[in-house]
Length: 411
Image 1 (cartoon, one colour):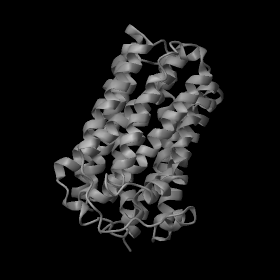
Image 2: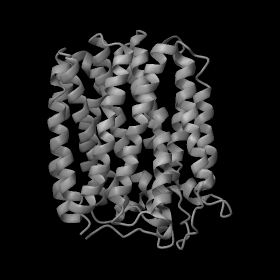
Image 3: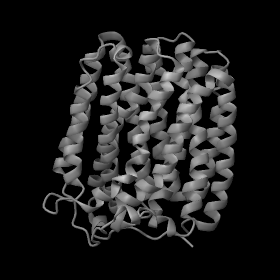
């Protein structure tokens, strides 16, 4: 049996260009700050002398994201009919992202002010996670089954474009001109999505929002194949990627790379091919189907992780490391696109935000915990041991994912 078709017919009449422009703006600006926190800030703190164990604790702030299923029903249930149900959430949340970024400006040496910096970052992640609920709900409603691959390609591509700026350009600005200019750049760019959201006219829905409560959150798992997908396949698939990714910035700092070099290579150059890979994966998903792209992403991710072995061994040739990171990020993008597309297949239009959030939250929680454990484990088994575990998990997840799609995938 296949997942339930979830497209809202009236929402599907919204212009394609308008839909994709909104999706691009939301996910790009959302990931400006997230990219900075997960890539740039980690490198800045490590450069300031923060230990690997402490960096592992910093990563746990990201647990707010997978916990967002707890308040996702509120986003589905409450909203303005006059101003657009999800649009009435997106406008204040986008403004909240800008304000919390500006609140970081007084802390020019973040490693000396970990307490307040982490508190502000946690608030930013809370706003970002809630914005993601509303953005995902709109995407579920606006994209047809055939358009979900391309839509999620744009979503993931926008995320990586945000990482290029947040994790790359912002670090370069910090290294050359200081903390305040870097934060102001992120805040200014994040504010650009406000115009797009304000100008968007959310179509009225033919399906009334289901009055979802916490007791109904898990009802999405009642669909055939949903439990095995979310609780088994995706966690294994994602843990492998998260574990490998978590060690990159600390390893480069340990190898003596400057913050500017890390920003250019891991944040900007390596993420740039991922934008194209995400768009390509979206097109391939529409042409080849979910199963083939799922296997392609897993194989590419395992091979690309092998390319990080020289970095784990301390061999940090600029050319090789750049190529290896580009390949890893591109493979990660392909994997993300197909996972999000299948999650969207299971999301129902009358509880779009709740369903999609619930489907992604468990895997995200495992990923964030895995990233934190990986940084701590690296102190005991080394970076090479962490990468070996990463490859095994990815391959196991890929095999189980192929089996799942043969039985439960969209025809």
